[in-house]
Image (cartoon, rainbow, N blue to C red; front, side, top):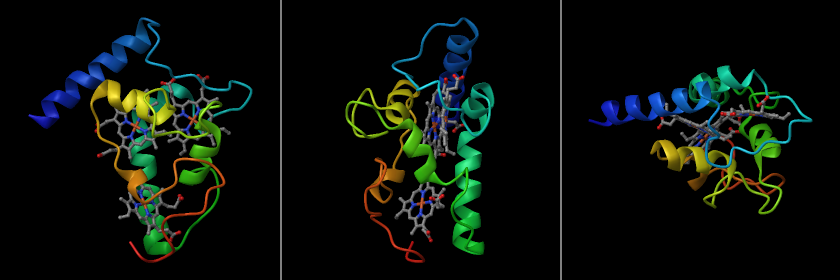
Length: 123
Ligand code: HEC
Ligand code: HEC
Ligand code: HEC
């Protein structure tokens, strides 16, 4: 059932993207560039983040383009300063829209520059 709902959600995202119908408040500062083209990011950001987490936890690799803190530094809202925690925040608005829960920020900071809620090697 969850898979089915996700398939529908992804279909909606694909349709919205294809038809150039704007998604709920995906407002991004276009003077910067994402770590990959937007159509790639839409499809693969989840694997990218989860893969990255494994590499950090198991291999100790940190920093660089795929760090979650980097995503947040670019995708935090200009008004609230955060990428989650408000219906119009970048990560959250799309996730609310497609119905995919985003629980990462129970531990990780959703705003740039804030002190980490988690310390190294204590998952
Ligand atoms: C240097 C700034 C920067 C960083 C770092 C960055 N992004 Fe982006 N991101 C952007 C910009 C700008 C766009 C819009 C690109 C466009 O539409 O041409 C974008 C687009 C996206 C999109 C597609 C949104 C849509 O239009 O549907 C997703 C998803 C995304 N980013 C997730 C991430 C994730 C996850 C990370 C960290 C792994 C990340 N971004 C890191 C700047 C950044
Ligand atoms: C229970 C707490 C917890 C939750 C929930 C959690 N993480 Fe983490 N995460 C950690 C810890 C601890 C580390 C290791 C930090 C370090 O060693 O630098 C980590 C590391 C990471 C890293 C690598 C470091 C970085 O900034 O790039 C990524 C990426 C990451 N997590 C993504 C996620 C994503 C995506 C989710 C949601 C699906 C998530 N995490 C949920 C605790 C958590
Ligand atoms: C354009 C819409 C969109 C944006 C923007 C977006 N996401 Fe996603 N995200 C999705 C969809 C759709 C899925 C579900 C894909 C699947 O499970 O097959 C997903 C899945 C994920 C997952 C995996 C969740 C799980 O339980 O497996 C993580 C982690 C994630 N997104 C993090 C982020 C972060 C962090 C940001 C902001 C930097 C972000 N997303 C922005 C649409 C988006």
